[in-house]
Image (tube, helix red, strand yellow):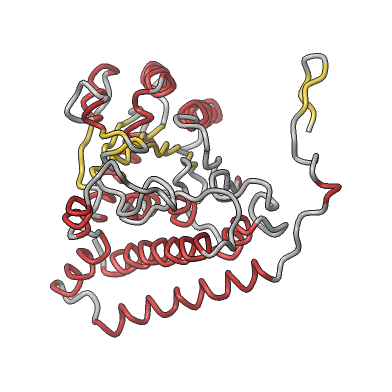
Amino acid sequence: MDQHLKRNLLKTMVRIRLFEEKVEELFLSGVLPGFVHLYIGEEAIASGVCSALKKSDYITSTHRGHGHVLAKGARMDRMMAELYGKKTGYCKGKGGSMHIFDFNLGVLGANGVVGGGFPIAVGAGLSAKLKRTDEVCVCFFGDGSSNRGTFHESLNMAAAWNLPVIYVCENNRYAATTPTHTTTSVNNIADRATGYGIPGVIVDGNNVEEVYSAAKNAIERARNGEGPTLIECKTYRIKGHFVGDPERYRSKDEVKEMKALDPIERYIKGLFDENVCTIEEVEEIYQGIRNEVIIAIKFAEGSPNPEPEDALTDLYVMEEGIYYA
């Protein structure tokens, strides 16, 4: 892996981390409306996977989707505006934290419905196959949604039709507040790939280069017409399920222990050991992104609110079996 890619992987992870830390601060201070689920601790997954994709490729996201969208190339100012509920946001202020999308970036939507991205990913994969393009779709999902029917239906259909879909499980050990081992009968989510005759790969989700390598291989398989892959990334969310979560379901000692595996700190240490970058260069990356966050907040704060008369635009209604936008 060349040094330019290594630096970009670090930059993407830091970009997600600083955005999320500021979002937490703004939400707790009462500035942001709605509900917020942070991606802190899982940055290596979105960064590694999306770095292996092309702009024309697709992703489906989750309720914890800020990191996926930023890693796919989203503008931070429009992301922030959406969280503020402003008209300049990606969804014109109507979607908020859990529903950001941008078709121009191949982002088919974050999704407040657990397991809601699976059918969309199959549709994107089928579209690419029918159009005979080399596009692929990555479906990000959590360990909890692997117990939903859409997971099994989607993997079965993608396998049966040999679709270019890569399923990326972000196993952070908890489905909301429920420990994964109490609700699954297998040791690894990736073991379920066997039932559908597709590869199941397990990686350290806090090692961005390992994630990138696995994603790159799976994407190449998909582009070559070899069908889907299930990648399980073992990780941990450092923050609670949502901002304000009392976290009674896990101990402080457990969180402290897992913080030691912070993907960004580990990667920076590795880059220093390999002489890829210096302390000054890392600080320059951090400062550049801090400035980007400040600009994003100013953009959001200075943006207009949605107009009342726009409340019913961009909605789909059904009349006599036909959908109208």
